[in-house]
Every structure is written in structure tokens, then in C-alpha cells.
Image 1: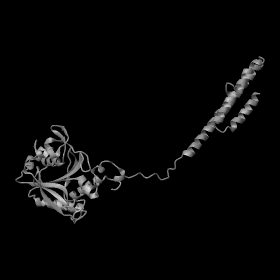
Image 2: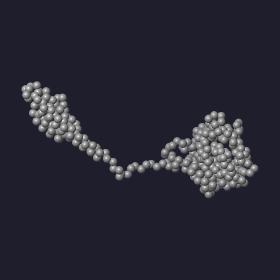
Image 3: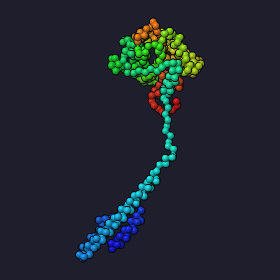
Image 4: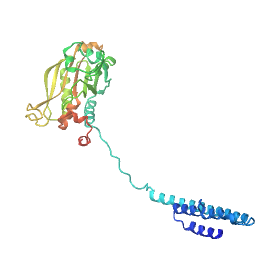
Length: 336
């Protein structure tokens, strides 16, 4: 009987198609209710001479069936792994999906162009801290405490003497303190003012300010520099207009307009029918600012100017809402 069990088990193990079928065979022959166990339980009916012989043969058959199951299990496991590797293999020769390449933000594009224009005229780039001392942001620029000009530049105060800068003009002061003339720099960067957010205002925006200090610098040098800049930015047909104005840190001061690049000066919706668009403020550096930085105003003179990056970009791309620059809407950004 044991030989018959061994023969049947061997045949079943040989044709087992998977691990589950193999486990069913193990239970059938070797389990608690299996056929080998049933033989061993029936040994009580045997004579004393037959029990050792049948017991030894049953154990031998059990061990042989277990060995066959182990071998088949390893073969089935190896086959399953081969099938899995074949179905999950990766063809490394197939081209991968191309990574989406980003591009510069429209503000960065315009800033880069403006930098290139001024670097081409011999200017260098200067930088300074966003968190600034009240002295550099106001007092060194001829705006003492309680000066009315502070009302138009309400900013965020860290404490009584530390503010988030309202302009990049403090960079000019720091340059003049460390570097003696000749000086020719632009200072781009973030600035902060306590403005409510709307289509034309933001508590954070960007400015680009310029400074030239040397012997014999005149208003004519300022006008020529800005005309060169405007023509490079808006085209050779662009015209520049200076209007008298007041800034505490320049004297004389001017607002600078450019002929409308949409209508050419005839008047349209963009320029509100005036034919001109204001783009920046400028003027000759105030003697008090020069002397406060250790530069003799009797020997040296200079000019300064400042423009808003967002304003230039809005006019460049005909954008009517400042908030679009900061909302990170890909539909908007992909246009540039």
C-alpha cells in the first residue's frame, strides 16, 4: 500500500502545475488527515513483528515524498520568477519621456534684457540686503524722520530702526560709502511697501535703480543714457520726455516718459490718449547725499534713476493686471 501511495504521489507531484496544486498534494499525502498519517494510525492492528517494518517503510516513503515536493517547489518557484521577470522586463533602449523644460519667468526675461543693455553701456551690477536699516533706506537719502516723503513709502518695520526696503536706493548709498568715483552701477532687486493688492499694486515688487558719479557729470549725461536705454528697449523710434518733479535724494529731479509704443504718440487706450507713458524717475544726485557718503559735491557730481520692473514688463507684453506675475498660472506663463 505504501508503495502505491508513493507511486501516486510521485505522479501527482510530477504534473503539478503551480505552487497551490503542489500544496494540495502535500496535504493529501502528508497532512494530519493524509494517507501516510492514516497508515501510521492503523499500525495498532499489526503484529509486533510487522510494526517496525511498516513504520520504517512509512517514514521512508514520507521522506521521499517530502524530497519530491521540495524539489518540485523549487522548480515551480524558479519558473514563476522567470515568468515574472519576462513579463516585467524593461527595454532600456526605448526612449524615455522627454522632461518638460522650463523657461524664465517674464519678469526675469525683461530684467535680463535690461541688465544686458546697461552692462553694454559700462554699468556693473550691485546688490544689497532686502532687510535694511532705516538710515540707509531713508536718512542717507535725505529723508529724515517725520519727512513727508515717508508717507508715500509706507513700509514694513521690523523695529524702529530696521525696515523692509522700499526702494533699491540704499544699495547706491552702500556703494558710494565703499567705492570712490568713478561709479557706474545698477541695483535691481525686490522692494516692499504697505500697499493693498490690486491690479496695479503689490506689497512686493521689483525695482532697477542706476547711479553714475564722476567728475563733470551733467543732466545731459543722464538724458543721453536714458535715451540710449529707451531706444534699446523699445526701438529706435522711441522718444523720451523729461518733466520736472521732486525727489528728496535728487536735485533737479524729473519724471521720464517714453512715447507710446502702441500708437507712436498719437494717443490710444494704453497711454490714455496722452501719447506718452511714464516709465521712471531720475535726477542729479543731491549734494547732501554725496557728502553724507564721503564724496565731495564740489569735486564730483552724479545722476540716479529708478524704474519698476513690473511696469516695464506690463507695457512690454500689454498686461493689465500685476497679480498675474505672482499667481504661477502656467497658462499665463507659457505665453512668454
